[in-house]
Length: 163
Image 1 (cartoon, rainbow, N blue to C red):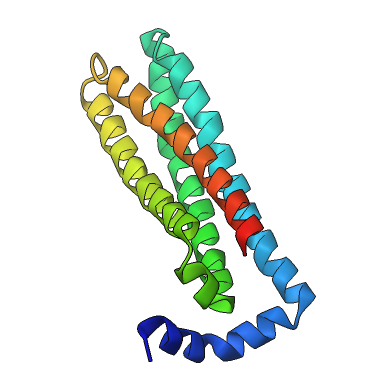
Image 2 (image 1 turned 180 degrees about the vertical axis):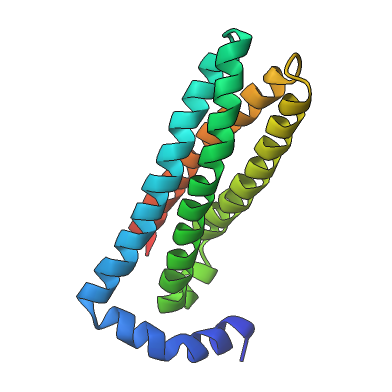
């Protein structure tokens, strides 16, 4: 018996409960989409404002750095909610998802989002120390963030049509 088969066997009680309960499936999917909406929504709005501030004056840039710092927690909460609900959906159909290339691409995008968030935090910290430099780096990280969030939605949409 392989690792996936053993994990699916262990997850069977959850899979049965999940698959036999439309309200439970709806609640888990809602949490998944709500996490994407909150995390991605805050991230995209902040990324847009960061791109605008990168071309603005020092006062607007200082305000935006403060905003980036404030919003980062909400983005992480949204991403964590998406990740947790995603694990519940994975456990409900482990054999299908474990063998899906699209699933693993989506998981890679989640990892890249966490890495990008780390890069964003470092860029923001560097700019707080030296407000005269580093806006190009923060701008690049913001563009990457937008691309990654949209790619995550694309991968999730594609995955929903496979499973």
